[in-house]
Amino acid sequence: MARMELSLGTLPEFDFGKAAVAFQQALKRVVLDCTDRPGDKRARTIVLTTTIVPVIQQSGDVVDVQVDFSVKSKVPAWQTASRPVMVTAKGQLFFNDLAPDNPRQTTIDEAGK
Image (cartoon, rainbow, N blue to C red; front, side, top):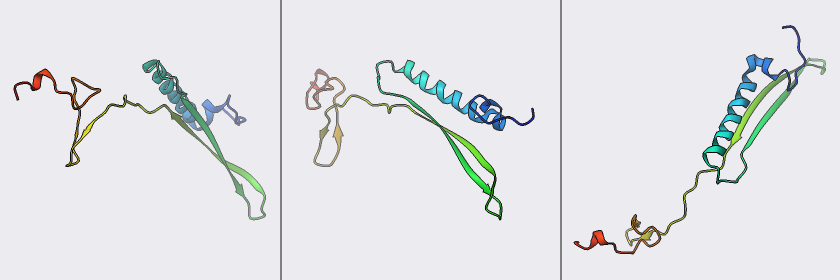
């Protein structure tokens, strides 16, 4: 094609469609995260940033601009439940997988020790 006005509509034609593809990939990533973690109500975000830098002649006139796009997506961090863990004097941490709410709880499997 010949000259095209740069707009969101022509973004798929700019720089071989790289920005449009990056945006679609980011959109897919956040939607899949929503379906993977439906109980997590926190927001997912996509940011399309356009950077425009003037190209200036010696006379000081702007003749062109350099344009680039960046796409960033953000999904909430994965987080486990908070559980108590016993600390020893040597700085070691111990948990009890059979009593996750009480690391000091003795369990039947320890009876023979």
